[in-house]
Amino acid sequence: MPRSYPDRPMVGVGAVVFKDNEVLLIRRGKAPRLGDWSIPGGMQELGETVFAAAAREVMEETAVGIQNIGLIDVIDAITPDAQGRVQFHYTLVDVVAEWQSGEPMGGSDAMHAEFMPLHRVPGMGLWSETQRIINMARDMRGI
Image 1 (cartoon, rainbow, N blue to C red):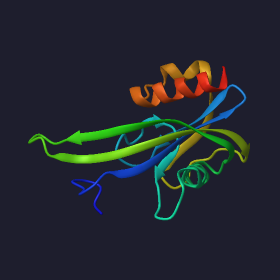
Image 2: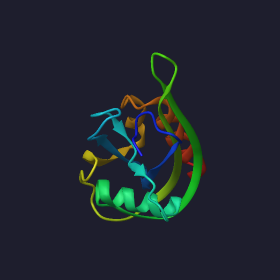
Image 3: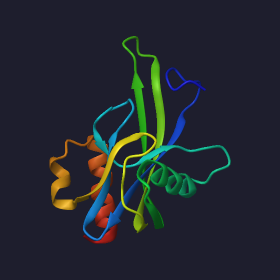
Image 4: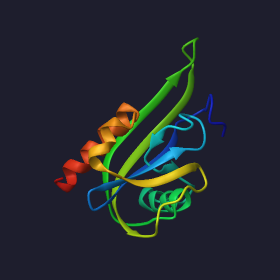
């Protein structure tokens, strides 16, 4: 199914991964938001659970293994074109996880990956929904 002008929503999974008081961020290697900072994630595959998709995408994009996954929130990302037709429609399922293994490095869809101190995250220019999701994950962890 094409990503633009789809006939139904596409499911994407994102992960807020913590290591102590740092969060794993990537610089996006593909559109949308090419070059922007974000959390790792990608498309759920047929037959794959949301949590398995999160673990796979984090490993593919950053070489980091994760554990202790929980649901944060679901975002409806619907982008109309100039005529009001739905050009993009993603259902984004975001989860929280803890670092288990590996050192971050950019992979598949990420040009760069690193653990960022939490105090630096608000100045990273993140999409407002990504910042909200990270804040919710911080609240869930009590930090």
